Image (cartoon, rainbow, N blue to C red):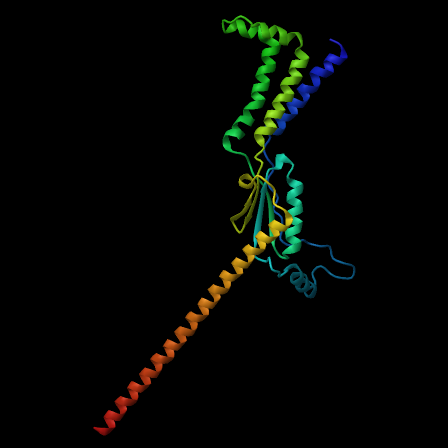
Length: 257
């Protein structure tokens, strides 16, 4: 076995082992992003100074048309959609100051995830059969088929093909093709149903309409609460006035008697 064959054999095995480690390794815990970014103290300003603390708190709280609104951008991370998600995130934060945009991965369905986990096992089984098929087939009472000998004659090319097609199938099964936009938990745009990406102008208009609807509902609730308060005050005034009139009448009857 010369050096070229060693390289052709070792490279797919090395990449395959790295795929196994990446696939079955536990995911790191997601780091919580603080709402307020801490900036280093400037020259001449003490970090424990209470006067500067109040100013920093006022600067951190930004009131804008998007304050109190959360937008979830759920996209397929294995489809290279992160660039589009970052572009939409910057656009929304610029158009609606104070809005909170969250980027999340949209996983594929459970059958596709299960099949993607089984692809590396199939690759290992195919490579093991190719390397030791002379001992595996007789144990099951089978005679090695003719295609086995033809594949074994070019085992290095066959192993490279198994690795390439396995990785292609795994990447296909791990992709969901999704780019879903949620505003305060409600679906605003779905690439799975529309079969296209939203434009920046379209997404800005959708989020703006949803913000207007939310503010209109809040104004309706506040007006309803004010009306209830005013009605309760009027009822109290009416009851108190009726009680006074009744007491005056009783006093007049007593004096006349």
